[in-house]
Amino acid sequence: MAEQALSASPAADRASRRPGRRFDLKRQPGFGAVAVTCIAVLYAPILIVVGFAFNESRSVTRWSSFSLEWFEKVLANDDIHNAAKNTLLIASCATIIATIIATAAALATTRSRAWRGQTTVYTLINLPLVVPEIVTAVATASFFGLLAVLAGISLGIGNLILTHSVFCIPFAYLPIRARLEDMDLTLEQAAADLYATPWQAFRRVTLPLLTPGISSGAALAFIISFDDFTITQLVAGAGQTTLPLYIWGQLHKVGVTPEVNAISAILLVISILFVTLSFLVGRRR
Amino acid sequence: MALAAASDHIAQVQAGAERRFLLTRQLLSGPAMIVVGVFGVLPLTIMLIYSFLVPATYGGVEWEFTFENYIGFLFQRDIFDDTLHFVPDYLQIYFRTFLLAAFTTVASLIIGFPTAYFMATRPPRQRNFWVFLITLPFWTNLLIRTYAIQLIIRDEGLVNDVLRWLGAIDQPLHILYTNFAIMLGLLYSFLPFMVLPLYTSLEKLDFRLVEAGFDLYATRGKVLRRIVIPLAKPGIIAGCILVFIPALGAYVTPLILGGGKQHMIGSLIAVQFGTSRNWPFGCALAFILMAVVLLALLVYVRSTTGKSKVVHG
Image (cartoon, rainbow over all chains, first blue to last red; front, side, top):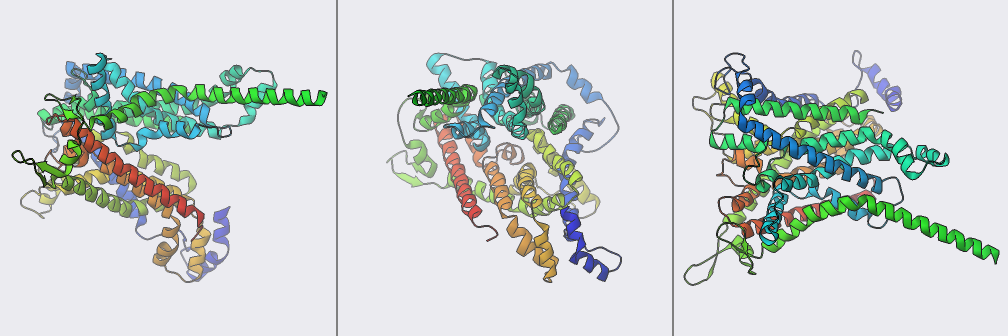
């Protein structure tokens, strides 16, 4: 509508003065080139890492020929198996905990008049987004250190699961909240009119409608936990290696190797798949 | 009488509903409050307490109160006569981090603005795809993306290969492990944080105002400077904050592209928990960083609430 209105009056007038080309209000010279370059530069490093994972020679920057050798080596490596198990265990548990908590919190903080304490809940949930990761890392490491010294409590890998749950909550919360805010309140009111109990109305009306938001949030939470390096590095105890920690260990001790490229490629592809899924599911009406 | 009783009853029912309303909401948000409170806020409090304690020999703390960690940020105590000497080493690292974060913010604004503008002027159906393209790299592993930058800029990397092939250089350019390398890494990591808020405010831009500018014989440059940029100001401020804050706390970037030689605040803090085994000092450094970040946020909140009152100033 707005665009039609635009092209109608003076712009069309101007277009008639300049034969051949319509005057485009929105165009700014060179901006398109910057945007395309920007996207290219964002993706080039990712493509290079993935591409050289298939390189036959040990060099990670000079191409020789196509090979799956490094992927075979990665898949046969026991250290990587263990790291993958840890990563998946932590990410799955953290995703489940964070998503349940975030769903409950989103139901509490949307679609009703404001209540006392709502701002506090909102601020607390989003706290991990504001505090720099390294500060969270240091604080959590101190906390679990103190817990071990004072009470002799160590939850093992549970430490990492709880830590990850905290910073996954806002990533699960935001899509769920967005979905709730878009949702039609009248549907639940109709359910209530038809004598549904609040629980029935939630179970049969709200939850099914909310599912895309929940899956979208869960996928994001999973990826955030799956990829975390900074906080995991400072909180992890001996033997609690995750895939990002394994990659850093290799880079630090051995240097750049094609194996690192191969694991990196696998991690990148997993992230991209999950996020694409989250994006597609979240858009569903 | 009957009327009063009825209204009394109604009031009671309403109070009951009100109590139930509050109770459900508190119960629903309870788990979030507990988990974030215990594993998010409590650790920050402990970090603050630790920053006033004495380091134990093998990591951890001795329970003895001291200001030494904050004094140690600026001064060094003479071993013999206990006098304090001003040592700007740590302050310099904070200052360098500040400069790097500021340069990164400006560079990402220069690149991000045209990109966001271009995205916002695409047909509505294409816009979502562009937003997806810009956000996708953010969700991939930061460590791997930074490692990818290292691959490209190292001495035998792609950039040097191409330059040599073009005959522009004989000797490889040493880019890796410099401030410039760190800045490239930061720019690469946080550029999406600039583009998205800019896009959001440019998408809402009323192009009738742009048209009015052209009708009054403004050039494209003038329309951009006098109409588009002022209207996109909230997005510009939000983008700058969103890039500046994580750049201040960056850890992975200096770790991989600074090679342990070019410290930023983040890597300096991590060292205290690693090889230096000085947890209290690490906590003090982290607390100072957080104070700076909160200050930046406060300035941001102030600037946005002030602005929203003046429409089209």
